[in-house]
Length: 264
Image 1 (tube, rainbow, N blue to C red):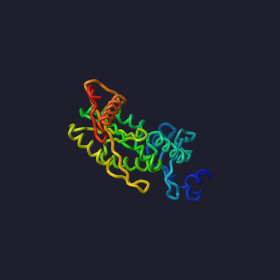
Image 2 (cartoon, rainbow, N blue to C red):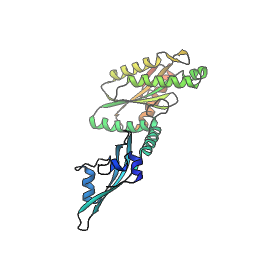
Image 3 (tube, rainbow, N blue to C red):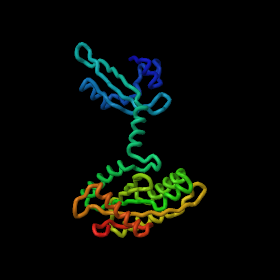
Image 4 (cartoon, one colour):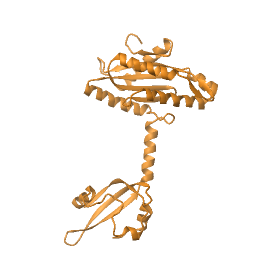
């Protein structure tokens, strides 16, 4: 029936093209929005739309029913706001809060959340999972010799390789510096897991080209399994894997060790 200037600015549709046609909103006759607005008198929410030029937008809409003197529905009045930039900012903040800026891997916060969820799923479905702590060997000399940009490039490449070695359903996170952690779900048996650990050691130890030089590092891995005889939380499992990793360091590096109460 009518629009204002803000409608044109947000949608790209002028008065001539807009009046007499449906707005760029999910408002066909059978839509849940119209059904709710008729029933309750108002509907409010967010949804995806498109500008006249095809650009995707996010809108926040309030749609109100207007009734005539006899109580019958006359028409609707809708007010909406373009919240595209707000949603993009929220997405960026979520990314910053949960993902490592350098490698794009989950950070410690997201790792902890995924570990909690994976433990609950393991209990429900009756399978084992493994928590692996990964620490690079001889990483500092690369930084010292070639600079931090080279070190960053090395971390990015090794993160990519390790992520490709794991399955899609597993999680690899960067905890900070040259330390990583992984969650391997639905572990069939320890030989299968240990074969995966061996592949991780191999993929880390392969040469990486950084700062016009071929550099090589290795990794020390520690792992623990869940569930155990005594109930554990995620932090305890990560500490167990960390302790096992330090044992691998002490035993000569470039190897993996399993956590045990008596052995670490």
